[in-house]
Image 1 (cartoon, rainbow, N blue to C red):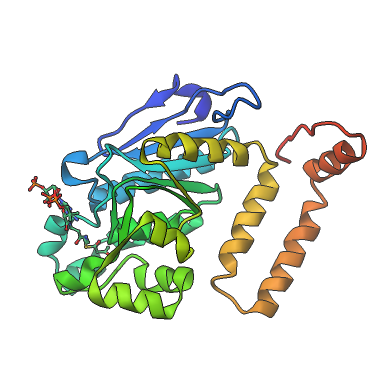
Image 2: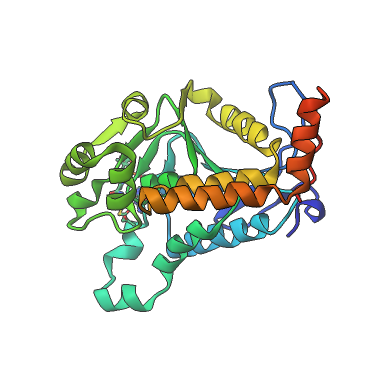
Length: 278
Ligand code: CAA
């Protein structure tokens, strides 16, 4: 589905896709180009089944290929949970062989292929796979009622969708080790203090504030936004020398774009730039 041919809203069983209407510039409301994805299993606290993650990745791939979409907000239905983890009922009967043979965890890896920036809007529980999903996004806006944690140890397992790696990179070994080995969760303010979230906001305002932030990102030149996202994420993966070289190349490459010409011309001419995304 492309942004232009949905009639504004489309739905699927586990993940809803919507496109908040554009608001006038400077209104503080989300601008055009923002898609809202909602995990829609509130009765199970938005637990992430294999089907759900597949649907989510499929929706993100469609949006990623649509030049009209500039930023995504991902949230959970209801106020109790962003997502309370991978679906424990579905995991309970698995074996090493069935997990390896299934493609459920490959879908999680595919989240990394999305070039669009993704803002997680988190209220309530973001536990286990829910915390991992939030961390796989590029920014986290947390309501004051948000709870983050990796409780898998209490189930006899460990985080399996990136938690040991992303949490450690986000908050450091000492804090990550304590949370992962005890399964303790932390509130939004503590998550902000340790650098896990970008912004903490009053609970009721979480989605609006995330949409507003996404609207500001969506108003930026899209090629530069994608390059910036890719480079920041690479910082978690490669050595500094390699990362600096990659950043330099990405910076140079942007000088072949119309948006670079426009952005610098608009600055010189003291006017607002118009981005073409090329
Ligand atoms: N999977 C499946 N169902 C879940 C779920 C999950 N992760 N989390 C909650 N639910 C379901 C419950 O089973 C319950 O369903 P029923 O009404 O049909 O019984 C419903 O959601 C509401 O949950 P609770 O009654 O438990 O609500 P609560 O307020 O008493 O407790 C909670 C909330 C503390 C979050 C509790 O639900 C809980 O501990 N959930 C599991 C958290 C967890 O361990 N997450 C890690 C999962 S494993 C994982 O994520 C692996 C990985 O890394 C990929």
